[in-house]
Length: 391
Image (cartoon, rainbow, N blue to C red; front, side, top):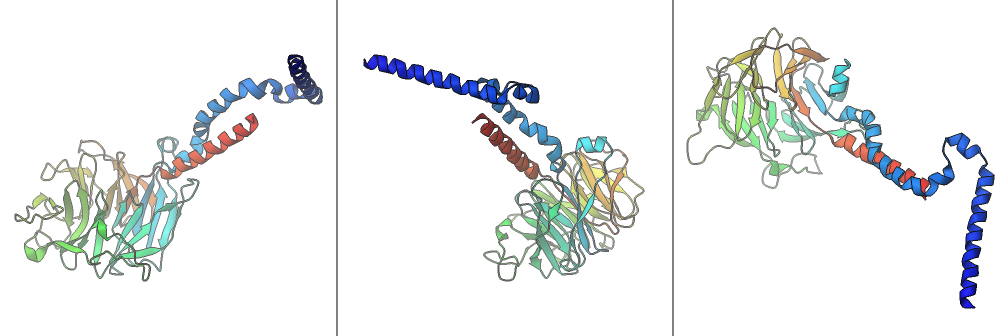
């Protein structure tokens, strides 16, 4: 008898299921198929699970064109003339192919800066360093992108990293150490990354031991320094430029970024004359001379070639890590770009990319953080929506 009751119960359930399905078909009528082009009753069940998986995988690709705009990163430009630091989102290959132009945005204007000159980026910590001799300081600004990768930056103030220096140029290495040139004292200074702690009371740099940077090299200690200008770091070495009136020092000097305690410093005269900006690509060293030229060499002391000539007053330069060098022309009020990723050193055209009166220092942040996070959010939302449909 128990077996008979079980069979009757199972049959009753099958009957209820058929009745429910019949009611749903009657209530939907033919509108489900007409409205959506598919039978929703069939879609619920066997066909939804593969569809959820497929759309979950391809949903980031569907939204990629909307977020790829921020993938390239940002170009930063200083202008002592305008007392400002501005930025432009770097263009993707697709945008360059269709002839898009960079759009400028203001990061900081006025009160927080006085004569912003040299720029440097700590890409790992997303910090922009600004050498401001007018304030007698090196400033730090957090690089904060908007939430959805629209190519805009959010300014949250500037903090003082180093005080009482007349630094016009600044550089960072791969781990975040800071290097700067001081033309007033003819010295090269260094602040270790271990000093990267902000004092909440006065918003100044507060390392554990001392807030004063370390003196690396000085003219009065027989270092070939005379009116030092641009500075760059590559590997275990640094390069600095000596400007006009440098007292016979070489235009570009190379040495170890950490002086040896066992032997006398070894300096290499990279180029003669005088120079201002200096930057390093994956294959060559570039620098702007005191005239109108951009020059390069493959290695310190190697053959020098003229890359571009005819600029008005070239100053800072920066490599974007992807084959392009940017250089600021202070007199022309423009930033130019040219190919700089290869090993060849011959002449090549330079194209204006942005216009800013008194353009002086340039720096580049390569970043893929913003759009990756946005794509993840979109993909998650699409997945949740499809999961609800499947439920």
